[in-house]
Image 1 (spheres, helix red, strand yellow):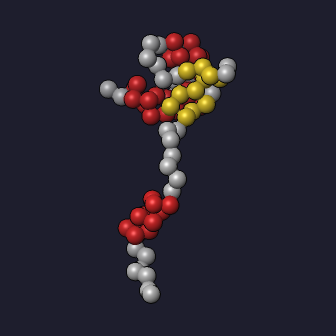
Image 2 (image 1 turned 180 degrees about the vertical axis):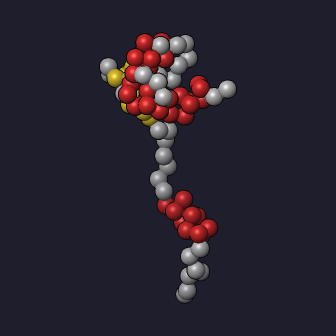
Image 3 (image 1 turned 90 degrees about the vertical axis):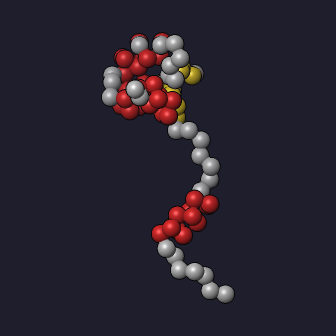
Length: 76
């Protein structure tokens, strides 16, 4: 039995089927969050974490945020 040739489209289908399901990307730490949005760590700690509805949360003493939700906050 011969297999069809490996084309870019076929490779994409094979890799997508083999990839494990991924959850949302979580940014850990004020530095990582600040770096992603181009602001300071102080802005993340003092302002962003205290906004109502902010995706920035403090978990076990460390700030974290779902990257997708964080970026939605800054989209017009």
